[in-house]
Length: 369
Image 1: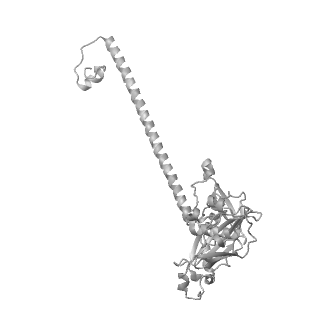
Image 2: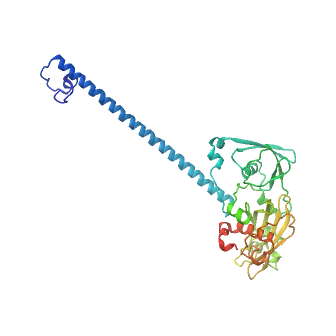
Image 3: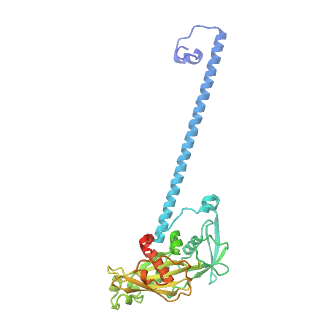
């Protein structure tokens, strides 16, 4: 064909309207047709190969887009986990992970679940389920959420051992005891705060290693007039006043403290402390209770109004083992530190209050000696 050299007139010329070529011998025509067929076959194979390459590239692109979306979803999930942990701990510095290392190393562990039977001293039993890669803190949060027990309960194993290290792996036992703590020794307003269901919360590894502090956080607050016997006399001599003045002179904050003593035992405490935040701070006052018995073991009182200073008064320290390595000095008089912290327990309580009250700022070197 004259319009498309190499192609026979019978295939292309008749369609394009090209005039017929001069006649040739049948042998030459057969040879030309064979050549054209080989060229067409080669052309078709080339086009198929190109189409296959394009298909593979498109598949790779889709795969990369899907992978990118998955990565973005995981990043967003991790960010939400960090924000949730931050909300749970209040101002406390902590670390939140979207998944545990065990779940990341073993994808099957991320979908596996464990079921626990929780029994109360009253004979009631209920079940909770959670991911197998969780820890004791996750188990406590699941129990609190299901039973609406608030913060003040403790889990015990078959031997009656307290399970209070929230960073530990899930216990091997599938049946655990739940001890609901009696908070009647606290004022009613503090009891109401402790009845709320709180998020899991996290521990700060730096504070755990340096200050021997576990989870320390602010749980809630209530007006100063709701507890008139909490030690306000140490800051104000005219405490017999109207409720409005009680409220003006400061609100009570409810704290959770976790101290790790010299034996490595974790002691969990509840603090009900007035921060006297009225523009002219006169120190703090309140009480600290040792869980699970809720015994009052320490008081904090305003001691020098001109310096906004407080001092810790220890009611019982038989439960506390002094660490062999001294704790760093607390430099803040307001929370009972500096020269007013003369014993190891006073220093430890000052650090716990500082971490709960100041939050991430307490990690600043200027707060610690």
